[in-house]
Length: 241
Picture 1 (cartoon, rainbow, N blue to C red):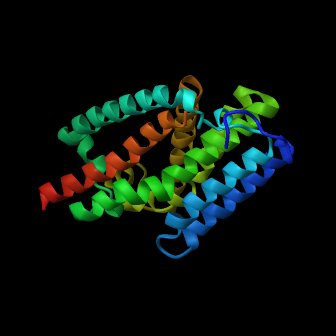
Picture 2 (picture 1 turned 135 degrees about the vertical axis):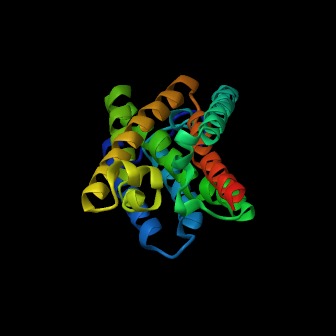
């Protein structure tokens, strides 16, 4: 994909519909497919969405992959990683917030935690999500209807994207269980809270994308929240073992 817009073969509106449909299918595949499905579906899906964006007339700058913004995006991303690291270190050290890291899904040995943080999460989660939500979808909607609507749609769908992953949240995370309870009502509250939180996070990620002009900025924050979270969780579990 070049920095300049290419010839348009698909209208932006049609490309948005196809993008959202493909994202929904990828979400279902990752949730219900064999373990490790997203390690293949994530990178492949990101590539296919970038090709769709090109067919809709978008260039590399439009999807956050332009060369001119790489340095700025990298600086933003590294600052986000550092900020999250400081917050996580403080939260893990304080007994009142430490329980938030006691998530059964990520209680594992250090080797598995490292693979999850540096391979599974980047390739199976962040690559596809950032290209899809803050790259292609945001770029398509901004081109057709403006930046504000792009952020609203991208962030709203990002929140809904987390419905399936949060279905067991009130049973595997002690902090959430204590807050909403382990039953069906607690599940509804946990899922609703997860959707609202991730939608708000989507707004922040879109703003990082806008300000930096690069996907590297939201990628940095996204990885820091997820990847460092896994490492801290594994570290606490190992310390308490």
